[in-house]
Structure formats: structure tokens, C-alpha cells
Image (tube, rainbow, N blue to C red; front, side, top):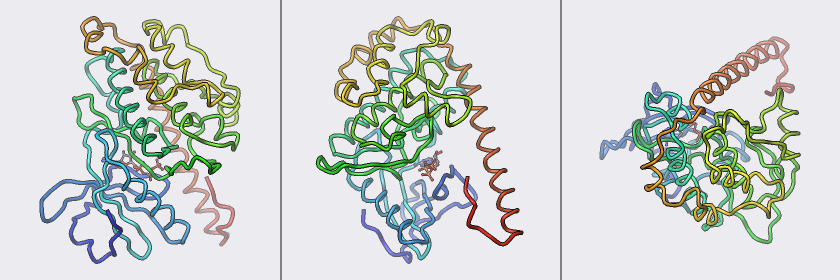
Length: 325
Ligand code: ATP
């Protein structure tokens, strides 16, 4: 996919009334390719400054290198004066965690194996292509549809190419999903994504966020000290293999963590079809995840309202310099 100038825009009908999601950099809408009627997703990234443009170009460049069933595919890309538009494959199943808490059927450990295996396959492919995602979190795992188990990783906004001799330092992301090396402003590498796979697996199985503290600084301290444990009640029906899988990812030292290739060979993700015949026990995680999602929604709304209020105040005093969430 090459970046086209804005006049090519009319090739697609972007449905600005249907918002699929929004984040730091813009909004995602449904859209239709006029020539084929194909339903797609359009991510409109605000790019006013050269730095913002460069970051959007990076997202396109990274996505251009990737083609895998568990990674969202870039379809086309356009640039206008203040926006960059990414036209992507559309998936209708919503966020994985939303889907799980919505489900009328209950979640078993085999369901989580199926989800984690695909996330792992997506990561394995990315790492083979020398790409680090660096922003894996539950919100960035989408379900292909409302009933099946197929998932795709999205949001390559912070992804970058790993160069063996380049020492890459980054500092961004959501505190509870950050690896210790990111919090420490240390060098990131393939194991950085593997840590987050450990956090996501822990959450899918238990509904609890392993490092979440009362506030961000407590969360970050927990991450830095790799301070986590298996909650007895939440992990009551979880297998030893699953716990071993997580224990081999949530390791402070990068070199101690399993690679994506090793994860795919781990006994927990092996022979899932056979395990499915005997897996009937429902996990506690659905109920706890529901609470987690409700808290997350509350926090998001709270931040949005606080930001709007701050904006109003700053607006009336005429200064924008101190604004920030
Ligand atoms: P963030 O600030 O959370 O990183 P972002 O601005 O980088 O967000 P994305 O994470 O790429 O944007 O997308 C925001 C949301 O839009 C996603 O959480 C998802 O709900 C929805 N979304 C993104 N891409 C697609 C897609 N291809 N199909 C369906 N929904 C999508």
C-alpha cells in the first residue's frame, strides 16, 4: 500500500456517523469501497505537525510489511493536509474482552487457549518480520465475529522495526500492560511483547489485572518489582500448565521470558482439540472481567470529563500550555 494524496478519497465512503472507536490519535469509522461495496474500517489520524505525520507514516510502513490472518490488514492509505487516513480490513466482533463479558455461554480454559494461541501466532509472525508491537493490550485484540474464536491484533501506532544493533528506548502505554523495561526506560526487544502476552493471558483466565494498584504509581511499582501472584480463588479451576505458561512470561529479566515460538510449543497450547473434549468447567474470570470493564469505562469517562473541564478552564484563561491528561 502506498500513501496516496487526498483526491483519491472519494474511492471510499467514510461513515463518520458510525464510530468504531477512538483513541489518542483520532477516530475509527466504518467505510465502504465504492467500486466493490466492500465494508472496511477507516482510521482518521490527526496529523498537523511533521512529528504527527511521521508517526502516521510509521504506522503505514509497519502495516505494509505485515500480512497474517491474526493481524489486521492495511487496505489503502491517504494523506490530506491535516489528516492521514488508514483504510483497513474491518472486523465486526468488537474487543475480545467486551465479547467475553457479553457472552451468554460461559468461558472455559479451552476458550482462553484458543484466543491466546492466535495472539501468539500473530506475535510470532511479527517478530519473525522483526516488528515489535509495543502496545499490546486487551483493547487491541479484536474478534472477527460475534460467535467464533478468531481474533486479530490491531493498532500498530507504536509498533516499530527492531534493528539488532539499534538500542531502542520508548516510554508510552497503559501502566498495567507496560513491561518493566518500558517503565524503566530501558531497551525494548521481542520479550517486551511477550510480557504483555503474559498479562493478557493472566487476565483472560482470572478476570484480574496482575499489576493493577490503587493508583498509577503503585501499578508502576508493581510492574518494576514484577510483583504479582496467582489469586487463589480466581485461579481455582485453572490448570498448572496455564500457570506455568504465565509464570514463564511475567519474568522481570527479558532473557528469562519465553519467546513466541516457545509459547506455541508450550504444553498449555498443545493439543487443544483433545483438551476441548474434557473442558467443561467455567472460569471465574467472566464475572471479574465484567467488573474490570465497568471500572475501565468509568475511568475513561472520568478522564474525558476531567479533560473537558480543564480545557474549559484553560480556554477561559487564554492559555493552552498547561493542558494535558
Ligand atoms: P489508542 O489510543 O487506544 O491506541 P488508536 O487511536 O491508536 O487508539 P486504534 O486502537 O487503532 O486507535 O482503534 C481504536 C478502536 O477502534 C479500537 O479499540 C477498536 O474498537 C476500533 N477499531 C480499530 N480498528 C478496527 C477495525 N479494523 N475493525 C473494527 N474496529 C476497529
